[in-house]
Length: 441
Image 1 (cartoon, rainbow, N blue to C red):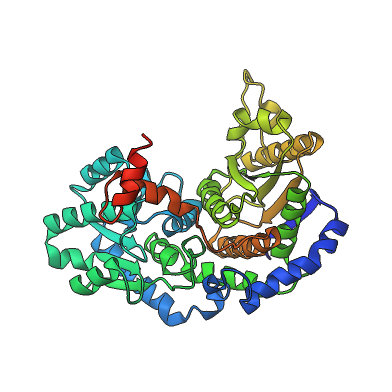
Image 2 (cartoon, helix red, strand yellow):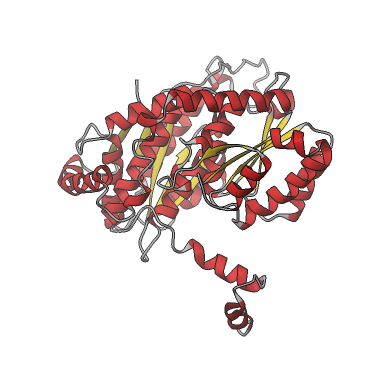
């Protein structure tokens, strides 16, 4: 089985067929590394070239952290944390933080904001915990994770001493360069490498995502097997390549004036998958005053907030619905003698049946309201199908960016806020920028 796509309620098959020659050109740029950003295509064959030895090493390191720690804090920002969080949240028991009695540590995240209250409350929470740190940064100098790591490293060393702390810190960083590599070599941290050719938002299937997922107790081999199956299925530009079909459909809709894509799920476990997807597409396509704006909603929850706008608002949107075929558990609605809530008409039905009818009814209403709908069907939420889904979206993102006419693998706009921030903080080397920006305040 595999994930499937249905574009019948979004674009015509003829329109997709007409665009396939351009899709083929985009695929050639990816596979032959001839397009803009070709230095960042290491993710393309990552599933097929990830050796068993690396997976064994990651699993051994994860086991060691689980043995030593009750809590592991994953320090990173953007792609250095979103992919891992998306997979862990999708696979986790929704109430694991309150009920877990096994030997799996709680995975927390830091370095993805500059919230003083957040970091203070995290350090307070960790005071009586056996904790470890996975720090993820190519350079070791990115502001948000660097601040968090400095604080947490100091706390850990003060609690257990430098020698034990060094055992509980794993650095995922550049092979040779950067502040974090220098510190890791100096302190003797266990390390994994972020390849130069794998950008952050495409890194979840590398040690960046695999180590936190393994520490959380999930099957990274199954994740990679799912990704490998999708790698093999997305080579050719034809109707059986669902990444090609998705990239074509969304670009056709964009050219027809649909400027906003809403990723919709009907399973709350996929909330952070939507967050990962937003970064992947927003950072890859939002350039040169082009790009589909990526948004995400959790239904049926957001039908009671965003539903009105989606149904009757400006017709510049389309939806991509993540539809999960089967839940992991079974729960039936009971009958009630008084029936005060009027629910006896669905007594004996599974919760998921009601959810599916809400999904189907919403899709019909939105299609009738002029919102094109793409559906991606996922057999179930497990490591294998999440691996498929991750690689599917990554491959489609590369194709789609080239169809759009941008470099999908850089992020020049992200640097603008950093320059301003450093100038306002009066970072050494930014004196001229500091003087200029302060004159504007």
